[in-house]
Length: 330
Image 1: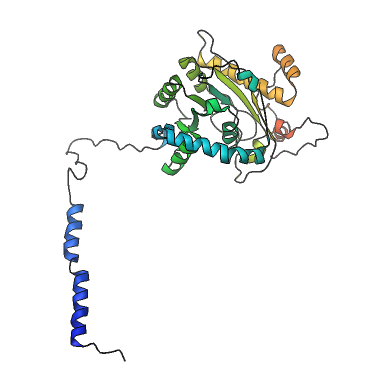
Image 2: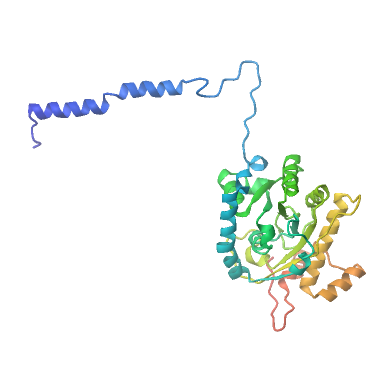
């Protein structure tokens, strides 16, 4: 049987209960007052007959990235690239980097637009660990606004660790292009994949004219880069990466010509990346002979069946001695 409480103990328990719940009505009144509070404690109501202002989402191309270019974020990004990304890419990608001597003509403080082909999510960390540090200290990366900035968490991580800035893929956004041009004019370099997305089949896609437009507007050189082998690491549709050897080839800086429009300039940039691809697949002398004879292979797939396209992919071929050809993934 439960112990019977004495009169004094019963009074003490009763006082404890009153102290615990005695202020509940007052707390309830306070909460109701907060909920019913009006201006200036909450935003003012829109008068009747007036169209309310559209709420800014701060996602996609509207995501603010100014904070990611301040000193603390830049220092953390540089440390994560050197301490984490570089050893990781050395293990996974075993990169062979060539063409650094072609960048010696550029001034130390000269901003640059780095342009590369795009096959894999591994392209970005591989490029970030390959670009010389004098440009990497002040580098922004063009990232798809609808993919990397569709949530606050994803946008924050992209801006913090790779220096991403949102870029519209489906349309030309004057806001983002003006912001990037302003940063380039202030000494920031820009890295972008002008194909607009990863290759779905391993072959290249036509280059868009955004990088060429910025180069003309800011009178800034473009450095073409060709990446090979990254499609074997993390091609589109894969979740887990696989180890593979890769090549990063830097080309000669390209400047816009007088009165050249962005469309023709973009084709010239694409041709420069294709020449670097030919150089990586063969050698410099063969690539130069094809260049001056107009026989450089394009980055796009030939008009043949899908299994032939997969078989003819450059990444399935290895011209080194004693190597075996890898069967393609269709």
